[in-house]
Image (cartoon, rainbow over all chains, first blue to last red; front, side, top):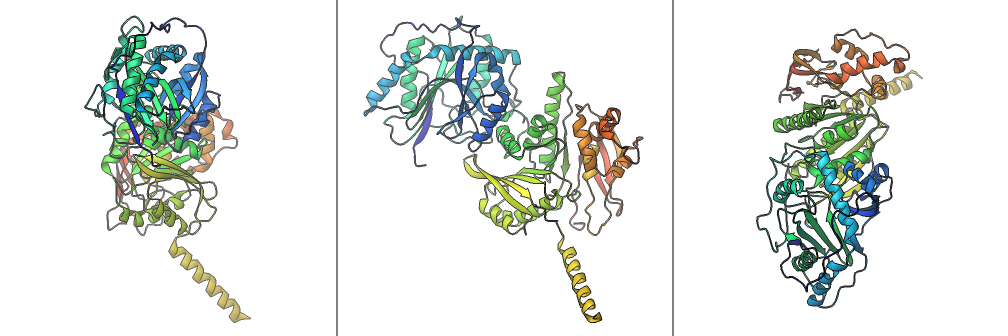
Length: 491
Length: 118
């Protein structure tokens, strides 16, 4: 995609011409049930998985946007709490307005002026009502569900006014550039407190605008759009602009001709919810969930992650698909310890809430090329294979991939077994599979983006072919040949 | 280490042919409450090596499975407890053929082999 992409946030500075006070008083219509459109960001490649989950848990059909990594669905305000049950979404926002074929003006000045004028004409009421209700929901739930306060590092220094592109995160990075609002960890920690204290409407509302822009035909930058649009919003609502301690985050998404204005419902990305002890390449939970859904775990399935790292995938499984049993394994000391720490953290959280804390998951330290597991005893293998970039190396992969694929084929149940494997080293992987002598069959591939790298999630079926060790095969062959000769001699 | 996991673990020391089941030598055991799901238990039983579980459990589990165990809730609850709720935190697993011991620490069995054993 040869499009320019950039994102920035603006708190508003230049006031547009004075406009009348908006009639969108916050706090008027509670009690009326209204229908709104919710937008959700999901890991690219898993839009259909998210749509499935939305259909399952909310009962509506989701629309997948052309702008990858986003889905939209309608919801009534009485069912709003359900959106927080979704495990495949990173961030949620309520749509104020959507334009599918926005005609931008020729010049930059005219375009920006139009954006400013847009602010006062948009249908804010319903979206703000949803934002308000969502705030109450979050208060009821208590403090946020994730557990990573201690570990997350603030990733933007420059605050206020225009931030030059990008919040490329220092956090184990799975977000690619265009996703604007997942950043700003600093913001979320302070703003949570503020939101709890702000009597919505009774105190001065603080806001910021985050703009994401992608496309090569725009005459303006996201900076400029955020600044001018933000300025008009400020003027219209008489809110105060604040980059870090904001109550409301207004989102301005411009993708070629598609323009979406929304209000954020999640303060921080939901993708780190389970992990408190990070490793160097921890996979976000939403991606883990997507991979798990792909293999459709059944009751009493035995699911192995032979290179579990911090245990993100099996842990998500033990929580969300808890009618199966998960064994997480790794050869590395730190990895298995982190996995156990993460499991304990979740169990403690559950115990604190009064529910049964035990999870159907176990951890073992092993060498995945020689698994200490009975042959044909595992139903599903699901793992994030070393890409050869941050972990291991490409050269190592040439030896590693074939041997671990063989071991995985050995322990996996022939005929019914499955594997879901994430890797960026697609060439090495495909070659290794093709040389496996028919033990695995590729069923489906999902292309995803992990930390800016183009990776594949491969769904494999274990064929009915029985795994035979080379030495055994040789012996059988020899025996067969000798029997044949003997028979011939006797004739 | 839960006993369900133990049921799948085997010794893979080079040259060993009868590395299953591993003998459990536990010095610290814990019991953790896990939500009971009868379907999970009844569907898991056929996947297990039953005799190995009986040996590991040290409780009175019948040596042979009763017919229609699927509907015997009391039996299923007992198996549920043994499979999922009992955890070995410290101790070791011993290969029945070579005698090699694999340590268990913090509930994690370390099955890594030395270079000469692989």
